Length: 109
Image 1 (cartoon, rainbow, N blue to C red):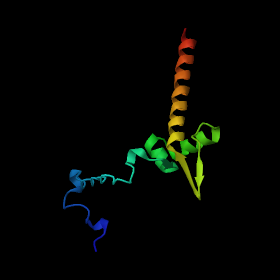
Image 2: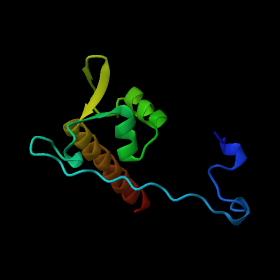
Image 3: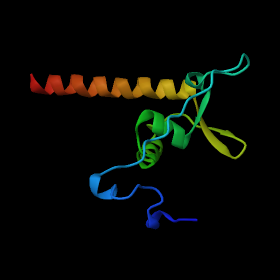
Image 4: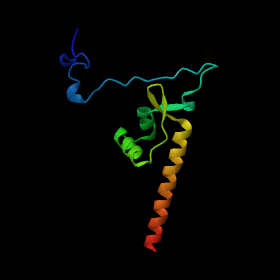
C-alpha cells in the first residue's frame, strides 16, 4: 500500500501546481417520521456547542469559569447544553453587547 509521502494522494506534478483533491460533499438523508431534523437538536455536547456558536473550547471554559457560560446538564457521564440553555445564553450575550454599546454612546456624549 502506498503511503502519503509516496504521492498516493496527489497525481504526478500536482504539488507544484497547488492542486488538492476535491472535498467530499456530505449529504444528510431526509429524517424519517420518528426522527428530528438536525436543526431541532435538543442538546449539544460542549465541542458541538462551540463549533455551532463559533467559539473556541478555551473561550467556552473561560466564560463558564466567570459565570457567563450557558447552563450545563449532566446526563450520565456526559456534559450537555440544552437547546433552551443555548438560546438563553445567546440572548444574554446579545444583551451584554447592547448594554456595552449604550454605555459607549453615553460616554461619548
